[in-house]
Image (cartoon, rainbow, N blue to C red):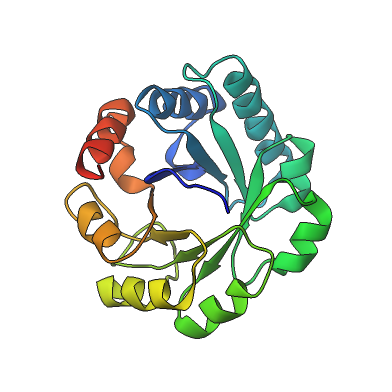
Length: 209
């Protein structure tokens, strides 16, 4: 079974004006202690996504500045392979977990998003390495989010699966500890890392000890 860091940082391309800015942001996250970073791009422009991803991979191999940063591709198993990422994370409307596993092989990490106990139980039976539950709280990072599950939803999710559990959606430094206490192994964060990413990451790790 894999071991997840407490903080699962997400780099969303829509929050950055250029590849230079995006990569600089990821480097700051790594400097703040992030060892797991997901690249997320909902524009559907595969060429741009691959360019971003390859540069993130190059930087990680150069030290980024911290070594051993694991990179996860959101949605796209094909781009995960093309950019030589360490894993892929898929949602309910993407390829099935087993289809993704057939593409990426047995060694790369596979994560699956779920939004209710039924989806979680179904995902738990797949070869996914970790499962995500959310949104925990109201979030502005998705255009049409599922209903918030709250801390009770995290507790229910923990009761359903023994796989590593990532909580996502509206998680901040102010509420992250309560999410871990409810049973999550890790918290996925986008918005509350955008300002001063290195300092923000460091503060997350302080509250998540």
